Length: 185
Ligand SMILES: [Fe+2]
Ligand SMILES: [Fe+2]
Image 1 (cartoon, rainbow, N blue to C red):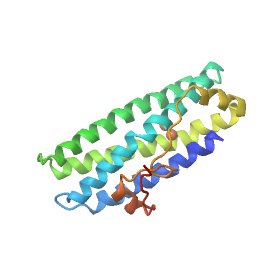
Image 2: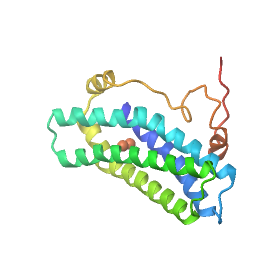
Image 3: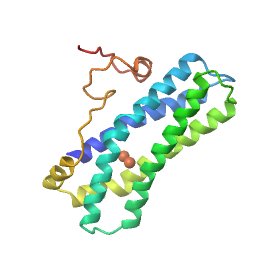
C-alpha cells in the first residue's frame, strides 16, 4: 500500500534529518572535512529519491483527490507548494555547502542557521502530511486508485534504505548504522 511506503519514507528521512540535527549540535567553530562530506552526502540523498519519487507520488495522489473534489483544496495546494519550496531550499543548501567545500569562508553561525532552518522546514512538512494528508489518502484512495496514480509516475528506488546497488554515501551509511553495499557491475 503506497501510504505505508510514504510513512516508511518519512521514518527513513527522519533518520537522516535527526542525524544531521545531532551533528549540528556538536559543531564547534569550524567544520571538519568529514562533517562537510556527511552533509553533502545527505543533501545528495535528499535531492534524489525524495524529490524523484516521494514528492511526485504525493503530488499525483493530491491531483487524484482534487479531481474527485474531496475538499480541503487550499490545504492540498499548500502541501504541493511546500514541495516546490523544499526543493528550492535543498538546492540553496547544496550551493552553500559547495561554497564551503571549495574553501570559501562562510561564517559558522550562518551555516548552523541555514541547516537548522532547513531541518525545521522538512520536519514541519512531514508532520503536516502525516496529520492532514495521509489520512485523506487512506480514506479516499483505494487500491485501484493507487494503481492509476502509480501508472503516471516513474518508479525510483531508495538508494539508501531500499534495495539499491550503490557504493556511494559510505559516510552517511556508517552514521546511520546501515550496512555498506557494493555496486554489482
Ligand atoms: Fe511531501
Ligand atoms: Fe512526504
